[in-house]
Image 1 (cartoon, helix red, strand yellow):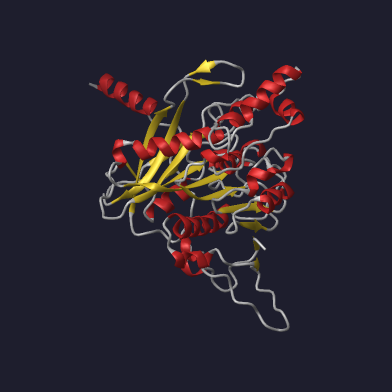
Image 2 (cartoon, rainbow, N blue to C red):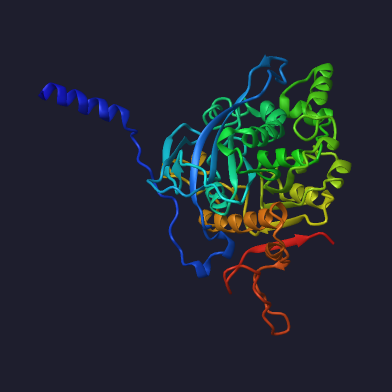
Length: 423
């Protein structure tokens, strides 16, 4: 019996991860956090799904392959039970576990209300739960939210030490395609039959996810020969021309902006890549009909703040806006760094902002993401007022008079932001 007991103990230890689930957030008083960052009335369920492209796809290398995506999908539930965890790994392969505020495989709450779908798209590299705080938050307010693992572009898929750009050509080709596939797959999934709003959807993309999001809502790509060669490593002019033809598409791989899915009612591009290289058609940007909220750090040295400004200035929809985090770089969207990332700059540099707390930025992102979705996706006009703030948030006195604080923020706690709207 003693031998059996030892064997059972050894088997249990072998099956138990060497790391434990960690809580990344502290509870702060609601009167110092943005109003719309408060949790909604629903409990949150979560389920991992694998979805397949309906037919083989052609890579930039000309290979015909099957392509599948792993999704983390959050949704409203009335169930109660223990919260689950999210497992992933850092860029150098350190595995970690995060304590969630969602119930794994819970049932979907059945109400008279239908739930719009919001697609979450990570950067290069990343993973489907890197913005899980947005997934849980929006689900608690009555949305179905699908976070994508972009195949060939995740921490797990890319050896960022030895071959850091191995997945970049696939990322250029597939970001928008993956976003469109995800909306279709979740809309048609049996789990959400009868509860998903099949006419209204939102899109949130970070970095390369933002690059894809701009395209998905109509900002067609316009890669020149030099950019194509630079980002694919190809030097043969004939091959470069063929790659341009493959890349320069719109709205999920289609020929032009006429193919933009009418279900997209709002998009949020956080630190979107591509504007600094002007790989989008200015004419197509000018014809975007979907309201866009660009979010950027004014010291972004990956996507380039001026490039993000160029995207905003050329985006046609009159309701589009640019929210700026002052003294921030590129990492404005990820959840706070897990403890396994603290060992080196290579890992923690995927999360850390030099002058901002990640938790604060996450709260602000929740606030404006919900405002965008409620205003433009659900059509709740009173939420539009949260977006109609302007100028500097710092309440700097003018002629001895202190301006009113931005709507939804508490006095003295909106520091460090700037909002630009269309003239």
